[in-house]
Image (cartoon, rainbow, N blue to C red; front, side, top):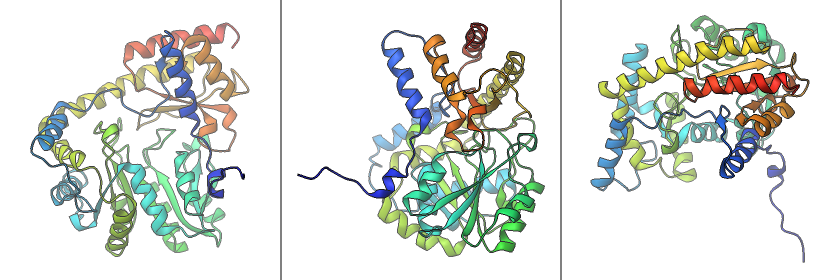
Length: 390
């Protein structure tokens, strides 16, 4: 009898290391340990009451069946209005595809734009699952090491230098995970110009839009109307478990994206779509803005506290809810540091190994997705762990 086997592509899919760490953290909690979670990119706030009520109303009125693959018309129109009001852009609802989370959008675009053997350029460090979406369709990521003093962001010069015949597109994020860097409109425009000159596709992950501090994050659509933009209801809107996102695509790409969506997931969750209509109401936005202010206070506490402990953070992150810190002055092995810290002090943070291959042993990502009081306790525990000699 032969052993069971799976497709060869599965062997190329790396584990999501933060999930390995989360599993251990949950095991410790189940045995009675107090764990402070700073590893997962999920807001600690539950979904806003007005959104929950809209979802409950959808359930009560029987809106539980399949929807059109691109999303219910009312939500596509609401997102179109969002671009008009928030960015001053006229994006017709016909160009908006509602997806099963931002991840569903990234999978759709990988299937639409990446052929087997293609390479897609992205910054190192970057969100790890992006590489895996490409591998599923037989393509691969071309990771380009970035400089901490430049915000870990790709520059136009790097894009031009590293673009080869196999590269068919560029994927970047702003605000970025894991660094929190927010690209200016000028930076987006400069990179977009290089990609256009190369004849490549331009995808921008904007799922942390709304979560920026001190400056607003411009959308790539303001500099390139033919860009593909991914967004999500998970982060700013606090709907992680509802699994809802969207793509803004050029007109030519809408019909094939709809065909792919029909076949890959039929439609995004119906209840989540009706609930998301409440995201754009004034009552909801007031709640979400209060939460953004809370994230800003957490960042303003955690950043100087980490620097005081010996972590090197070369710039102030202006978006998302992450701090990407150099831990090399404390330990030569950030992966071991994260797991040892979890075991010794019950603080869960994410090693740099999740985000790329450019000196990952130097870096750790801290997510300030827990209360200020818990962050203060986490800093005390980390200080104790370092003083004990790690």
